[in-house]
Amino acid sequence: MAGPGRAPVQPPAWEEREAAAAVCGQVRDFIRISEGHAARLTREQKGRFVAICWTAQMFKHFKEPKPGYVADWADLPSWRQETDSDIFEGIEQTV
Image 1 (cartoon, rainbow, N blue to C red):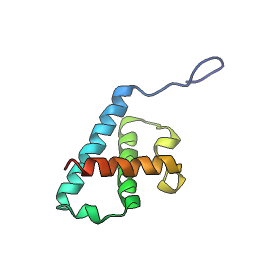
Image 2 (cartoon, one colour):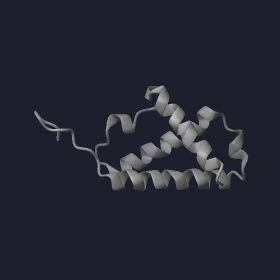
Image 3 (cartoon, rainbow, N blue to C red):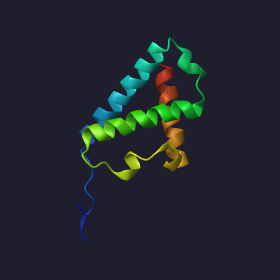
Image 4 (cartoon, rainbow, N blue to C red):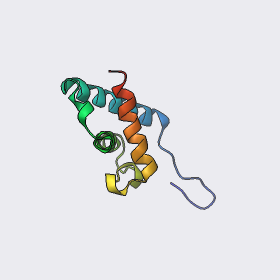
């Protein structure tokens, strides 16, 4: 917990890595199950999919995740929306 003179507590890196790996798997599975038709999604739809997968992983790993980790798409900063879309498209290129 943060307090005077103390830095805020950061979640353990392994939990974030585990969550990221799970999201990667979810995106890969989604692309495979759609038999490649996920390519027809808009860039925003791809980003939204990553964001909702990430949100679910945060609820799985943290009793009270940071609000920024579980924010709705419309509440995410544009850089985060773009990053989530980039993540989907990056994974898509490997499937």
